[in-house]
Image (cartoon, rainbow, N blue to C red; front, side):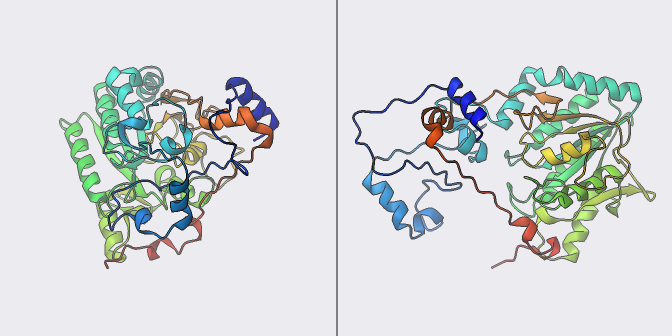
Length: 385
């Protein structure tokens, strides 16, 4: 944290007052975020409870202890069956109030109709004027962590009612936030909805490309831009491995590599008569419908950046209209155009601590870089025990 950032935080958040009823602790105060660690059912499937953790156990026995709900409606998720994630565990910690998380924000914007104002109207007008294609790109899943298939269906239905005649969907396959090997289940549901919208012949809505999320498009933290490049080739250039349908691609990849996980199915492009059915071209409009930004921001940068883009050779770069589902980086205001405005999170415990002890605080964060160092995608399979 820079000196300037610390000053800004100190001005925004008041300092904490010492609780005189508590003894001054020996040594420093350490706030540790243990991602994925929580209070479970304490049965044989509870990894935290069954592990040998003498230090962790001792901390709970020796001092005051309070548990908090980190899932469901208590942290702004859609239902109490929704598990917590990085956003609710890190970004809103100690805020003292509930912030709607990504899925909830989009659900409410759809219910109120706010999502169809502003940017949506702009994209519809441009596609209509240009007689071009609307592209919807994102994770095909109902996991509720990065995206929701119901949001995709809402976009498709509204596009149809607003008179958009040509839509192409670029599907990223999950197998991570939902059960593995479920890609065809979600794809079948999408194909059924597309077929319903195409009835009567006035609409041309199709799946155009895709691939597994961990090898196609959804890189994060700049760990491997080659993943984004693979998506670019599939979605924009239409030059990934060719198949007559997304289902044919999934089936072929599974036949070639037994047990391959959905999340590492290689990129593909759907073709008809030897030509891609829906590459992203000049004059088109693109919506990235992931509401969570960490794995959507890089493809957004590739689609929006000018000639100074340097992460990989994009080749011919189409002039498009773009919007993301939400703003993926509020600090720098990127992307510039998005459909749903999120409430800014403030008043968190980190801000209060920074305001109180900024000159004596040290922040350390770790980021995993497992995927880029793993064996080639085809080697990553789920094997039955």
